[in-house]
Length: 452
Ligand SMILES: *Cc1c(COP(=O)(O)O)cnc(C)c1O
Image 1 (cartoon, rainbow, N blue to C red):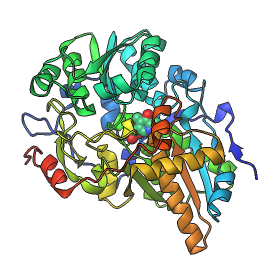
Image 2 (cartoon, protein in one colour):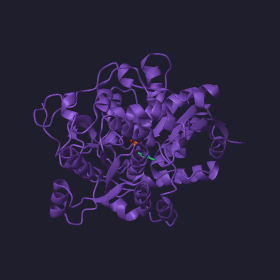
Image 3 (tube, rainbow, N blue to C red):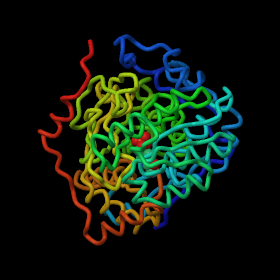
């Protein structure tokens, strides 16, 4: 049994991103100004983002053209391959047809450059000199650092302290691309100093690092802020993944019955699924779509659909999303990219509409799935991607139980070459599952802002 690879030729790389906002039956709730409680205007966001990205944030055009310069860079690793996982199917003894799209072939090893390159391009176009951002495990920071190097932009990254200490190689990668990396919480911002004063040993969180990055960007007229997930324009840029997958499934002469993706802020999941969900919303072709999140950070399966801040210091606008509360600091699971308290508003909206489903999976099941995948397919997945694999394996085993063959497509959003410590710990039996109590959920949600 061999693994089958479906590779598009270069001229079939998508030249436009797909905007799901064109096909939604109901528009998502507006983003609110934290001071007035009124919907924000594009001008309110102008200190933080270039206007081109703000306009994408609110656009309802179905397709938005990918600029030539961005396409030229995408072509270095896009289209990415789609594989039929025949050896995994055999190992699972399942009648399911399992396909995966592999985003680990990008220079930084994940899907993140799809939006990093686009964001750097639009900022450069509008005369921005410096990008400020946060990073958890370092996937986003390294992708933006690379994109900054391509377009001659300075990049400043606030890296969650626990990752800064535990993942020195990602930090070195960012520095090799020319970025400056600061451990967060830091002494460089009011937000960081306030956290350190209250909690000197704080190991940081994405919510805190976002506060620091937003504060620096808002005060520097030559700088803008850049976010690697959650926002509509980020999800938009990731749809190249799903558009390619649509064409590749056609080459395979198949169509997914089920699409599975892991969700931190929701961008790689949206990237692979939105073009298929668009077909479903337009009544062309049905599909089941499953988002897989960590049991230790279960925003969609155990959080609340409510207006909340995107950061800990309450500096961002209020977005309606599935949230565990902006104060929530998730336990130190190895899938650093999935440790965010909220979910992309578009993904939350689709869950509320019943268009997608969400499940959560414990850490040990995800690593067991990742190891099984590596032994069958050869690729060591990022710990985040292990969640998608675990979800796909559950579906494949269900096919076996029910004796039906379904096509399952999942997004292998990154490789795990920088995460070998996680695998070392797993194989040494040092990883554990996290039970997250009802009280903890209630406590974190108690701090939600009052709206309306
Ligand atoms: C950042 C990251 C994630 C989580 O972010 P999403 O926006 O949910 O995709 C997942 N996997 C990898 C490999 C990442 O780098």
